[in-house]
Amino acid sequence: MDALIKSLRPGKPSDVKVSDSKLPEPRSAELDPSEFLAAVVRADQPRPSRAEAEQAVQTLLGYIGENPDREGLLDTPRRVVEAFDELYQGYHQCPAEVLNRTFGETAGYDDFVLIRDIEFTSQCEHHMMPFYGKAHIAYTPVERVVGLSKLARLTDIFARRLQTQEHLTAQIAAVIDEILKPRGVAVMIEAEHTCMSVRGVAKHGAMTFTSRFTGMFRDNPAEQARFLSMVRGPQR
Image (cartoon, rainbow, N blue to C red; front, top):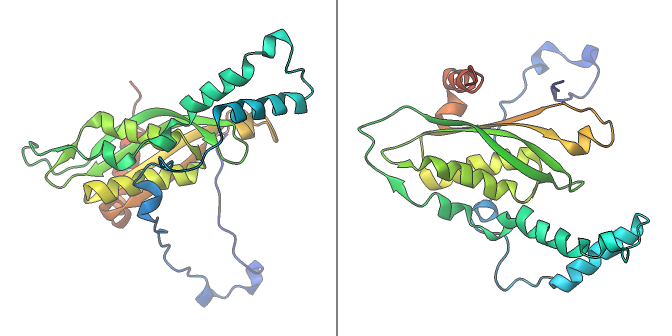
């Protein structure tokens, strides 16, 4: 089950004149570079202690009606905090550093580079429940290219934070655009959100698609179409 989101327009259809029917061209919202170029957690940033974090887990166990002192749960607060350290390690990593090393031996290559099917798992910032899927990333280099694994690492850094899929898509595109200065960037993410599939409306299998285009991909519909065609091409 796939969902399409259409923008709402004010007024009834009968109230809209033909001359008013043309909407202004959409403009991409600019992200503040300080939001995506550096690690989120600074060395001098005050943080709760590990003991306080484990106590918070105990409180939640009591809230749901469990007995935190029963044998099976004695080690749960420690395990949960350790899991948080792993799941949210992206807060301590710098996205810009991942893309700092580039290579100039490209033999004049001037087409886009696409890496598709980058698997990721992230956490929804609204319910702290997982969403997971695949990211597809393309960029058109100017003289220098970045190691292919770096784009997968970049995806993981942003995914290992509390996120919305829209923000995750925009951040990946923005940092590539800012650091590599390519002729264009294309990012598409497809994911299933457990906050929708296992709670609330409980629609298992519903997929959400988001995309972000800059430069030549934004300005040239043919390049967008070629990118999407390659992303949706035969799976191997």
